[in-house]
Amino acid sequence: MNTLHEVISAAGLKKTALGHFNISNLEGLWAIFRAGQMVGVPVIVGLSEGERDFVGIRQAVALVKSIREEYQYPIFINADHTYSVERVKEAIDAGFDSVIFDGAQLSFEENCARTKECVVYAREKNLGTLIEGELGYIGTSSKVLDAIPEGVKFDDASLTTPDHAEYFTDYTGVDLFAPAVGNLHGMLRSGQEPRLDIERIRAISSVVKVPLVLHGGSGGTDDDFKMAIKEGITIVHINTEIRVAFANALRTYLTANPDEIAPYKIMKTPTEAMQKVIEARLRVFSNG
Image (tube, rainbow, N blue to C red; front, side, top):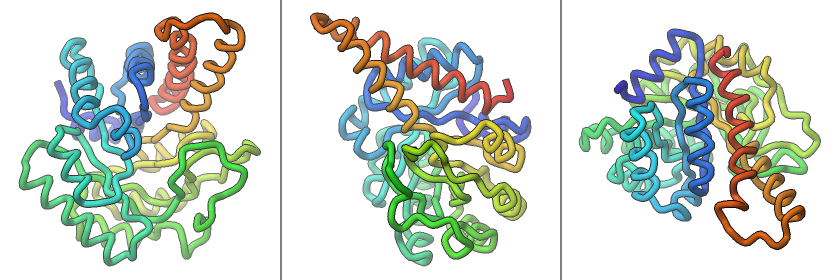
């Protein structure tokens, strides 16, 4: 079976993108896997630090790898937004296929230094773990927001520049790079998400030698995704959309079935709701 690096490289050549979807429970994992099967594309399962603490770090790896081995399916696991070198090392040691060190709130120099430290550790361990670096602050919360978070700006002074992107990726040696290009973590309650800066994506892609990752994809338009993928985005992160689908379906089911107490019955409808959202996004990312 191909490695995650090989799968990402193939997507880049085809001008498609892999879908990265976060989980907090087993239902989310099954939703991602079944959606991937339906569309016939590889998928990446992500867990933030909080999600890893809830599910279990080694347990999450074991769950994803058990599906990959049993079904011989290209499903991979990523340690999403990791804010310390020690927690990056923890994820590498646990067997994650990839890990993101998020130093976006650090100074440029400190972000470079810590990210490089993560890359060096991954190379020393030689487990095949990909390291992703991030440059540019796009918020941290995967939830429905009333307004753009404080500190998130969409101007030339705040978004990632091609010069910084080129230096950062060359210096650190990262395998993947996540720029700030008008994207935003979470979803705005108004439904009017910021538009992606496609020209900026094109400019960064032209000077960066590694695949680009788009974080904060929830709420984005199909057109923006298609244009971003055409210009070099090879992975798109979605989390808030799945959480909204899960929560809404769960509330509706419990309201309609107040006497039901069997978790596997209660969770069936929310799982299907998540799968529906994931399938729709995967079709867009794969030009299906």
